[in-house]
Image (tube, rainbow, N blue to C red):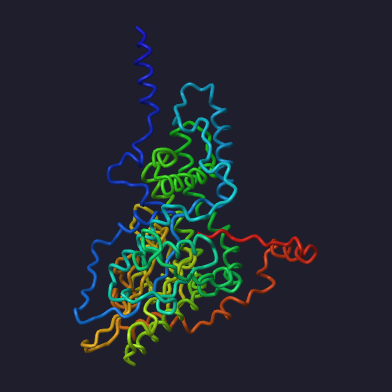
Length: 492
């Protein structure tokens, strides 16, 4: 006797049912696994619960603060929006190929899907969620350090700097609005005007050192193909599983685009039940790891040039601390010297700076970078790893270096505490402590990097290092100087 049609249909659904996926796991939140596309509110809750921060003695007083921050959550860039438009066309073709196959059960959202950013002509701007991230950070910083921010605002006391990229300068404005809220007379929020200083994009070696360093550009171009090759086995493994699971003939490129869509939907739209739900939790973990490998090799500890080109920024931080110490020693009155130096830039700024001060390392690895030896790549899941883009440089990620005066201390009168994403963070170069005597911080952590000169590191590109693309560009700009407009690399 044949089974009723209803039973056959239920069996068909059961046979093709996908495994339990990321958005249905109670203890797995995909929004915390998006590498450098992770929103700040999700990233700041990721912490090493085993680490016990240092107790700051009552007699210690915060006298200066350095902040190096990344811009907040932003919209996809124009290039990435085109990729998502192409994905919509590709999905339409994939579904057309299986429309006669009744056994294929795929998520309903795939049919007729169009990118939420279709029709937009510009991209990469700070979105409202990103504005809130920086505005709220500004409020929290003022509340955490009331002794530093009780003075009337003056641009020489609280200089705020940003790159000329709009999402960075907009982030600086949002932070400043939070920091100085109810400190002025403008509007119901009693805001006040403040200055945001930007250096020319072409010469900003302080916050855009990655874009001014010719050797780094050559290094990155040379490494990108090998990084793509390194990620291929992971993408191939997941592609195979997705084809089996959903019955659609996905390619490696399709999976890469779907993962990008997942990150954009989860981070920008707070949506995890579409593209992200195509992947299992273990697949999300592998894709996140593959992204983290790329960040590690091209922007982190994978090569010393990645972070040592940031020496102008580190020099600026050390100089500001020395000036604050001198002001303290000279007994200058509050309001007559700089109290905080506040900077807003990109992942390409925050990542190298985190490396320069020895974060996300153990002591053995710190000794290696001092000897300029290569570090091992972050281990593949399910092994645990320290280096995760979601914690190292999420949207609105930040490092705050707080200088404390501790006059009663017998060993050092001044200490530096590092807060990463507002949490005290251990420094491998200072015995894994988050509080480091200023002399140790300067000599042990900063000095080995500061012996390098930015121009020597960055301005020695040889003719052999020039790619064919650059050569063609030079020829084009020579023949058509009026029409020449060199393309800019996308920044995080």
